[in-house]
Amino acid sequence: MNDTKLIDIICTALEAGLVSQGYVDPDVLQSYQPEQQGSSSGEVWYIHKIGPIHKYGHTQKTNKLNQTTGVIDLVEARVLERKYQITAFKKQTPEELTQTVKTADDMAEEAAAIMQGQVFVNALRLEGLRMMRITDIRTPYFTDQHDQNDISPNFDFTVTYSKQLASIVQPVVDYTVQINRV
Image (cartoon, rainbow, N blue to C red; front, top):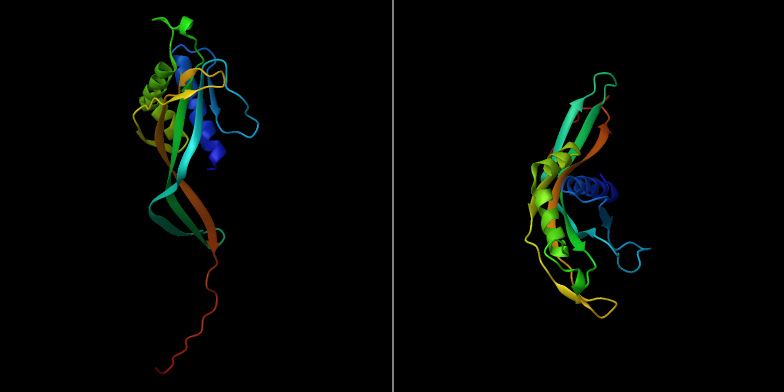
């Protein structure tokens, strides 16, 4: 499974969860793209990979004789961990802040709750992914391009998946016994 497929699975499952919570056509986008310029004007959740791929455990090797071809099929499986970060963004002015309007903090909290829910976890399991953990929500502040203070709530999560490599081991046809002195 490649990186693009992993992000697509996660984005699709999160979008479905957001729709079930009343969001209309939510945007879950991959951040740090080559053509991405400026910030979005509406509600958006960004996802990006953080950290290296972590190999979990050791490689499982399975040898099985293929009866039709007469060769041995070797399958090597390893479990990999990937860490991602979700950042919620919503451009708001002080006039828009009322008790009924959702803030970026609310959006991040809802996304984290959806991702911990059974429906999201089951959607990932159907694709061969396992959700391991979701961290607490951080709320760093920054100054945007209009010199206004804004918030960038985000959290990290870890998923695991199995990656398999298949190869063929040719059978031994001839062998010679040779005894040597030591």
